[in-house]
Image (cartoon, rainbow, N blue to C red; front, side, top):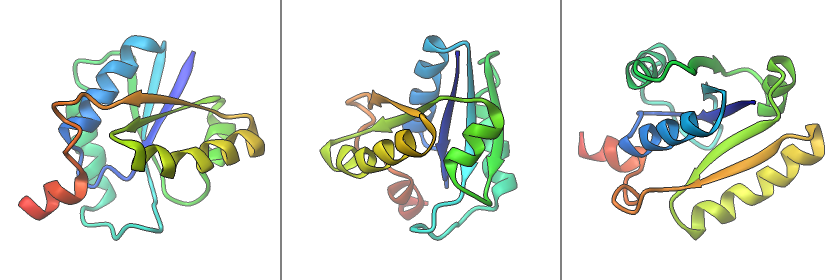
Length: 134
């Protein structure tokens, strides 16, 4: 079973890496994909994000890295034949944000959301916080 782990990954955090490692244990293949998010201002070039994701996945033989910055997530899923989207959630705020998108993806393309709860020791980390601290 193939799953997609999408995100802006700007930058890749320890929380992203944890969700990716855990997802790799659950699915036959995980495609981690840099996506465009209109609500975020990209700080790192996509090529650098891809490089950092590849480095984070070097020991995960069932993980591939890709990007899709010109279209909807469901378009990528249809093209790649993927029916499951992995989303890491840190708190109820994340879940409130993710649920409407999960419902929409299911309605549009039959894509199911698979939520992975953040490791409590990493739940405070966000890309925005990491960037602010850099």
